[in-house]
Each structure stands twice: as C-alpha cells, then as structure tokens.
Length: 459
Image 1 (tube, one colour):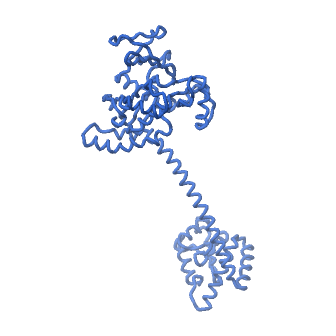
Image 2 (image 1 turned 60 degrees about the horizontal axis):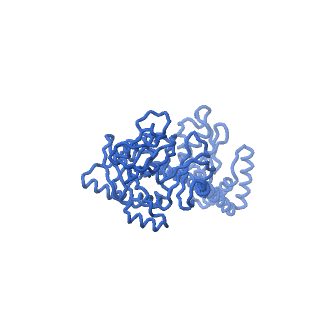
Image 3 (image 1 turned 120 degrees about the vertical axis):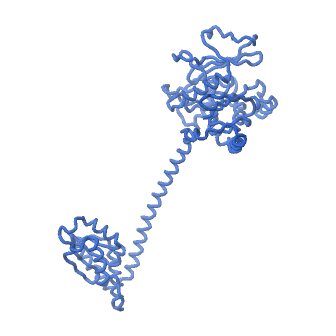
C-alpha cells in the first residue's frame, strides 16, 4: 500500500485583504508550487520526494496532508451537544473570547470527541478562512480516493504520557532568519511559535529554558515518513482518539473530481512508462474503501425490501378486488333455480360443519348452472362422471391402488373416503398433493374428501 505525505506551504504574512486579493497575492508568490511531498511505497519504505503543485504529485492509495501547526490554532472549549448543522452556527460565538479578529474571517471546526473525555469537552481548530479555502482548492487535484488533512503537531509524542518512544515532543523548521518550533500538548492539541535563529550552521538549537529537558528533531522526510506511518497505525481503530480526524470540509469529496478524473490517465502512463505498479489489490481490501458503498448498500437493501412489501400489498388488494368483481358478475348471472340451489348448499354445508366463503359458494353455484346448460345442449363438461373419474384415478395412483373405500357422485362432484390407515397423512397434505396434480379437493371429515370439477374454480 502506497502512502503520499504532503506538507502544505506556510501561509504568507501578506494576503490579509479580501479572499480574491489574497488568492491573487499567493499566486504571485508561487505558493501553489511550494507543496512538498514524499511517496512511501512497499513494506521496505522506499521514499520518493519532490516539491511542486498538487497536480504534479503521483498517485497513492492514501494521502496524508500535514498542515503547519503555526497556521492553525487548536483550543479546548466546552461545546454544547447539537447536530452538525446547528454546531456550525454555534461555533463562531464560542470562539469570540479566544480571538482578536472577527470570527467571520476564520474557518472553525470542532474535532471529533475524544474517548474517555466529557462529551462537552471538544477541541476546536481555527484556520484563516481564505487560506483554508485556497488550500482545499489545491488539494482537490490529488489523485487518490483517501485524502486526510491533519495538523503536523499530531505526529509528535505527547509529553509526560509515560510512553517510552524515540518520537520527540518538539520539532523545528528553519525559515530564513527564523525558527518555527512545534510542540504537541495533548491528544488533539499542539502549539507552534516563532523564534529568531542566528546560527544556521549549528545542528543544535537553543530551546526555551522550560523546554530544555525535551528532545527536538528537525522536520525531515526520514522522520516524517516513519512518524506518519506510526500515526496511521495508532489511529486505525475506531476506538482511537484521532480515528476520524480530518480537517477537510464535508464538501471536499464532492468538489474533488478534477484529481480523480485524472486517475485513469495516470495509471495508463504508469503502465506505458513501465514504472512501479500501483498496489490496487491493497486498495480493494482496505475496509475504509468499502465504507461508503456499504452505507449505500444498506439503503439499497431497505429500498428493495420496502418495494417488495409494497408490491406484495398491492397483489393482496388486487386479488381481493378481482375476487370481489368475479363474485358480483357471477351473482348477477344466477338464475332463480341456481339461487335456490345455492341457499340449499349453504344449509347442507352448515349442517355438515363445512365452512366456506360466500364468494366460493356463488361461483360454485354459477359453475353448476353453466354445467347444466352444457348438458342440456348435449355438450361434455368437466363435471361429468368420466372426466371426474379420470381425475380421481390420478389421485388414487398417487396414494396407492387400494386406498379408496367409498365414493359418491352427485352429478357435479365426487365425495370419496379413504380406507382407515391406508393414507398416513393429514388432510392438509392430501389437499396439497391434489393441488400439485391440478385437482381441487376439500376435506369433509375423517378420511372423507370432495373432489371438485374445474380444478376448484375460485377456491
């Protein structure tokens, strides 16, 4: 897995006017060409360094952007519990006592809550709004799926943490006649200040008296690469303090299409040039890559389930409407004799303890009426004895040749009875077997059933 470490340039002291004027001045100072980068590839930690614009930087599976601590102020304050939108409205009012300039000139962010700390106790990051917008615009050209922006002080160790480590607690950087000192003071806290440096040739620096017992190191790629990898390793768990810490705004990924659109072209150039291959396999097995697709898959599954339930509900309603319509049409076509027969059948079924819906009774009466009309015309119907006997023979073959004990044909249906013990199945299994053969069988009692014509139309 490849890691690209990017160091943002220091904010020039000029450019304190409007955002448009500031961006113009920074462009004249060639700030966009002062981004330093280091590409770490493979387990052996092969380093490739450079300096220039973000558009000229190579592809990496993950990008860690370091913001100079002197350009960001980290303060600890009590923040009310509120949602993200409401919190952005509250934060400018909370920082007024900490700043001399107007809060509207600052980009204010509340860092993620720290484990083991009170929920109201949060760290707030203050960055010049115009400079932060300019930096974000430059970082959009990075060709990577994972870009993270953090203060560079978080690569240092926490003083008095009891952690025995070679990682120093103070780092320094020489800038012309000045010396920028950076120190980490907490899990998400750090400070940076400017000291005058007269001796550039000396490898040692003079720390303030209160800090002379602490070790210091100069910002160099050898140290930054190992510290950045250690930072990512220490914060790979969701239980770590800086697991989700990222100063980039929420709108960054929506706007960062320029760099991602160049990804395919870059990979083609890498293949053509025969350069080092990109570890795509390491990217696809990274769980962070699948975090957003997994979130969308939950919405997709929920939508499919909701759509299925709606469709099932619609089928139930449509089936009920269709049955009701069939019942109404059948009832309108019944003759007086069929109506009388219907009432007689209901009385018989009630006496025999057979329960059935009124729609089934109406359709049965209508089919009997149609069957009688066909017989008067000399036509063969499905309710005649020969077709009904053939159906019963199919059922007899399914359960055995000697299972029938008695049968009774009433001119429309056949009532039959199984021999006791010949069929070791309950009535539901018998009716299910008949349905699989395209037959309609109703249970009348112990081992007694009725075979309906027309495969039980409407049943």
